[in-house]
Image: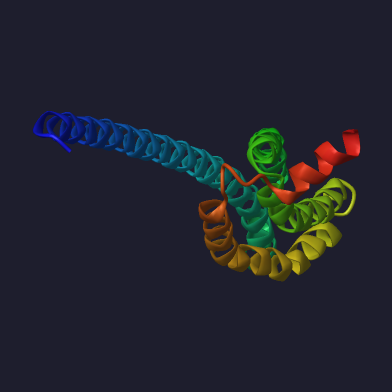
Length: 195
């Protein structure tokens, strides 16, 4: 091989190496940028899910507090329990329930899995509210019986309230583990049912 051919071959190898290096660097940069974008999307999704779950829990706490408040008066200060308190309970729950249902709808829109994990707790609250509402519905007819029924519900209300902090923690951990690029199995099932 003569010196000119060797020089040309060396230059060609250098040029190919430079092009390959530039292409590899570009591919690595694109991959890293895509990964950063996916990580940012996942972080935003998880934050939205955690935030809406927290909002739902705030309404769950409000709902349970209203029940705890009226049942506590029935148990510990029955003479203070009057028709104004009953109306206050009705107003408070009437305002809280739509907010709770709205926040649950937003949770469901982000993750049916998280929504379904909240349902047993929400169902228990609505069952308790039904019993409280039946008792206060009797308040005008038979105050003593209504106060007794409300007083009997305090232990069930307290059990639900005691479960709220660990349930909140569990739901937040579930929300944190959710993957944006790995859809909920429930959402996949729902899409499959439509096809």
